[in-house]
Image 1 (cartoon, rainbow, N blue to C red):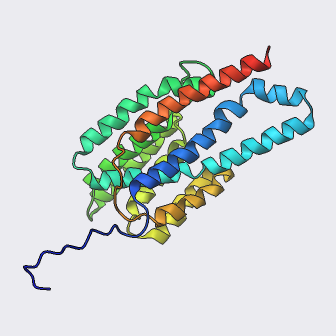
Image 2 (image 1 turned 90 degrees about the vertical axis):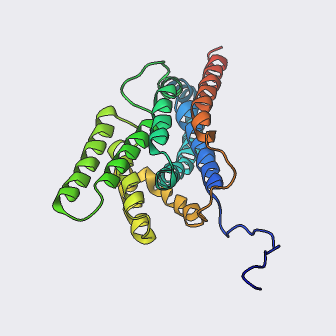
Length: 257
């Protein structure tokens, strides 16, 4: 075929899965996790299971544990996608603004779903972790390059970001920010990336051990966006929390009748 010949062969997508599929996997596993956290772990439901015998309590506890273990898959994928978004975005300021807005839009649904009150300042939703992580990445990008000054700058970015997440008590707090940073720093070294991110998560709590399953779809990522679904996670997060809160309240009403 000459250089001037126009190929008529259809475009073949790369093997693997696109970012939209990764996002969908993360959303589904997060939803499964939150069924356990927002509904099954509610004190009224747990007390109801205890009153109806040890077997009921064991069944409920086992189902809850399974749901929560499945849910560990979500966060590493969201961290990976955040880094991909940061590396490829054309406007990081808009990206950060979007995350920042949904930090606050999601807080009331988050507090209602998990703490049964509209304002609970003892724990913040995962958008805060992702937002802080993105700010740290912006700082790391600014201090790229050799030299003691840049090295100190990068360390300070991580320390400040991790400290802020810890202070605000965000989901995954300082460990979550570190996972985001490791996904970014070792994005071109998959083996080291996998080891550092998984060790960090497991150190936060042994329950995170099943998060290692997230590495399978991450390794299958083909570098393509897939179907455009930019706001899918942003909108799904607060909406599904409102939904779970409503379902939980309905179940409690039925139990207490």
